Image (cartoon, rainbow, N blue to C red; front, side, top):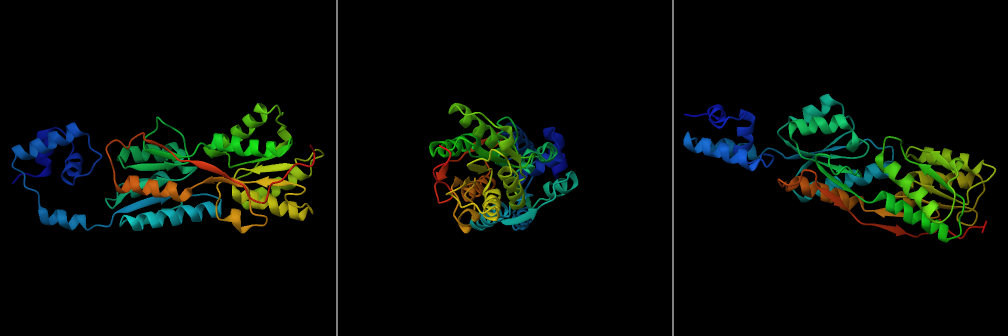
Length: 330
């Protein structure tokens, strides 16, 4: 009776490739798939239906890799992924470690059908290389590399940042502080560029003293705002690169005795739950993390052969709330 090793020799491929074809996995080239099926037919190979049925009862797992200092972001992503997996009858595993050994162990597990990578893991070259070597499908959130493997889902951070900066300018703000996100995040760079481009387009100079390094955490937003408010030429508005830091900025303003938005306007980014949990509620950019995660799970749950290098750009919107008002220095 022929085995998959016999088929592999006949087709001139590895036995792992034969296994993927016989298990009806999608990550096999059509020509290779046909070659294996032809070899199996010539050898009169009969599939063990009972074994296949047993294998099909294995749980299908999506691995979510997340290591983000923003609690709001992390909670939103985890909840969205869990709800998405429930919708498609999948299991979710959460991982904060992403060293090569961990990734290889997850990728070699037959139950793992794919990965969702969040920033900054979604930009980690070693992680991407390991997953590509194992030929496991993965979706990258918040990153813009059209030539990279996997599917990328993101919003146009640069454009969104431009819009919210321009909104502050429309309120008469000429001195706008900016709190940058974590240095390892591509999104942080795009948001800074959008801010700078909006200033330039409106004839305003970039004041490097008004640009402070944060790390997407509440604490860094508080400390960065204290630094901005200690300057001789204080900004009349502050753009924090995410809502968590914007919440920290609100706390710093309160400690300083400044009323928001009467004395200082503050905006965030993401429209995460914390944006409506603080007072005053934050003006921010809405990127629907739930839509992003739902799309990521759908792509992995319904794999297609053309998902490699796929780009999905989602909409964003300004959400105007009570943390912004007219500038006093007009």
